[in-house]
Image (cartoon, rainbow over all chains, first blue to last red; front, side, top):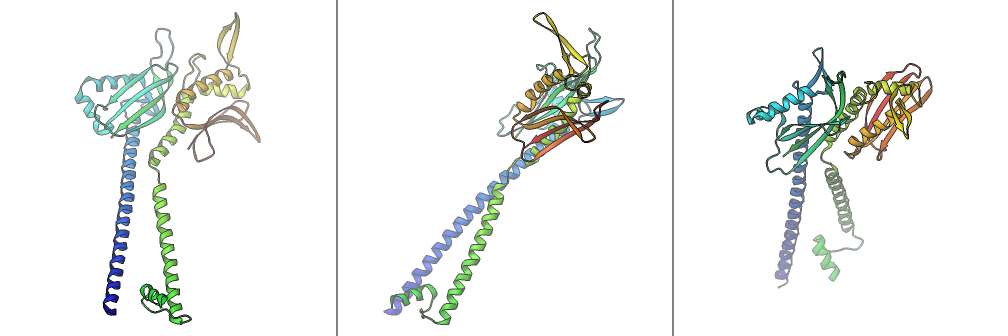
Length: 170
Length: 193
């Protein structure tokens, strides 16, 4: 009789231990999966951020729009005439726009003049016409070069202050 | 009797008061507890480190670095709208040389019929304020912008503008130019976290 009771106590003890063990395993698994999910989101965000930086960098160094002086490219400067030509070329057809897709991905790129005429802006590329979940906006101050100046008043070429606004969608 | 049974359930053997084997068991349990506490603390710190990682560091570093260097370089090359086609660098150097008024007459306005000359320092003051307001202020970026001259041990602050808290980490863009009478002029923009 005593032996039977002892065995019952041992059995219930083992069951209790197993129960606690499985609860701990379940908690551990939930905790681990939450951490992993967060890490995955972090990595995804980091990749998207890198892509946004890549797009901004690629556009900043496009030879199509960079200012040049005696065939030497000036960094951080866009030639307004070249910008307008590129805007016209990309806006001409979808095929032309698609030629830039591998470089500029799903993004919208706007160049804004801030000083002296804050109203002027050029939307160079716009691929925002799809359902996106995240938008990363990057603004970079730039110089805008007006090579012609104002021929009517005889003003020479001049530099304006502007901003490059890149929005990358994912 | 009851304590002996409980001790048997917990430790798997009978409790013997003053018995060295019972004491050794207690020490083992204490050791195990210490190990468990250390492991728990380790897990806690690892988890806390993982949770404290913030997304967007790469882009933030790139944006701040680009902002600080590009903003200053774009500013100095910009041609002033109504200041005899001078660029901002010329105006800054003139303001530094003839501080606090400047020698270049940027534009002459008429205030209540009286002609009023906007000299380079005043022109620089309101134009830079406008440009920073339209860019970094609008983008909610904390910054510190300073123009100063260094000649020997004397430092003269020419222009200063700031927005937000700048006590933490910052990325700087610095440009050095020679003035005619005031030594070296330093244009410095700090973009802050």
